[in-house]
Length: 134
Image (cartoon, rainbow, N blue to C red; front, side, top):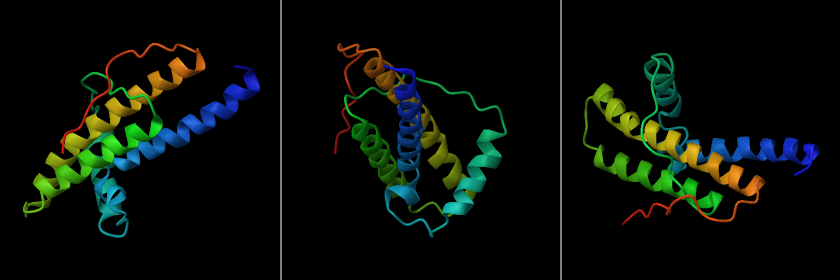
């Protein structure tokens, strides 16, 4: 890969990582951005990003960029449905983002490995992709 190509490639990597991470936010997954999205982002910023949150777990690996996005969206929708009856907003946020932030981190890490493999023309998959049932 030439240097000019790498600059453009990294621009697209950033855009795809943004999509992957946004897909793990229920309002993005359900296309309802006006339904509390700003409140959720504020909560995440205050609770997790300023607290020295530490990522845990292995990278999520797939063969195509769309699979990372679909994976996060499916999990976000399942978690949202599971927490629909939770009346305590703080408890709902804790459970939602306690699940979704690690998923976003692990899928983002997996996509960075995907890009590395692609950029260096490494053809053999690093691991079996995750399969999400249901």
